[in-house]
Image (cartoon, rainbow, N blue to C red; front, side):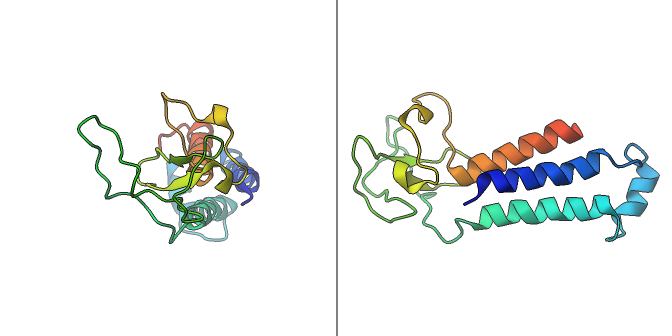
Length: 151
């Protein structure tokens, strides 16, 4: 999947929004938001569509939202399969890793991600996000930075 292409498209649409001459004028913004021909409205709709496309790329893949941690707060690995290839087999060079983004609940072999996950990307402390979630998080961070909001 073309993660960089999605991110670049979101940034391009954000540029239209940021450069809007009516930005900061709530009355004009409300009027413009109802007109689908206004570039800002088109940009907002395009961003929404792009984020929906990213989220749909893994639609239908198995999730592990029903697995509960054990008494030591560890996730049991027996029921977990790679959401992409559906295999339980893993090796030291190709672990199955769980995405830490709230609501994702997917697991992947390092080599089933595109691009493959390098060992140094997966740390004991701190979250790891699958490529889809990395793209979504990165897009929302850019939206928040460019628009001064908090999604």
